[in-house]
Image (tube, rainbow, N blue to C red; front, side, top):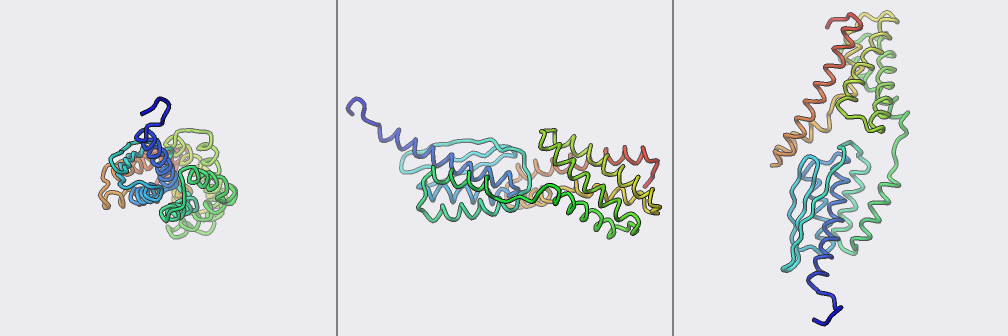
Length: 265
């Protein structure tokens, strides 16, 4: 090989690295948006194969993703951290659609990154006030199903809405998610209890319980079961522990609120 000539093997490894990084980024966005492990693996594999990888191996942790891609005799492995897991159905759906398009061919790693940037920038989000009102309404509606009287309906709605808005602000500020759960459980339950007692409700204790229903980790709990059943017990168990921790901190918050209000269940 003449001096200055590119080594084709090194060049190929660089190509595989770009493929691996693009696939990992797509999978990371899907996971952070609430996808289960099998869906994340499907996204990563579709992107990697669509970009030219012949074989794809994946391994998931609760806060990391790793991928091994190969083409011919060349193989490369890369790992990426995963941020805080949330729920963003729109973004999750758009990333899966992107993976399907990439899997059909016609993309290069740079264009995949460009499409992901566009999705992160342009995928619409509901305004926080609308989410808060909808959350409060859901808490009040479920409260009625649980047995609160009509007098407590509006106090629970207001408490749930304020709790959701406070949760949004605290999480945006980077506060630990479990600390946030404890704070919201205490604040929302206290507000719901005070409001229900003020309007003469006969179901104050149930109103306090209904006010914190926004903290029920439905998607993580479902994903935990799905991941374990799909053959990913490590991630599924980690998600289950996360759900248990949320419930522990929520219980501590409402227990303090009940003690403050002098209410017994």
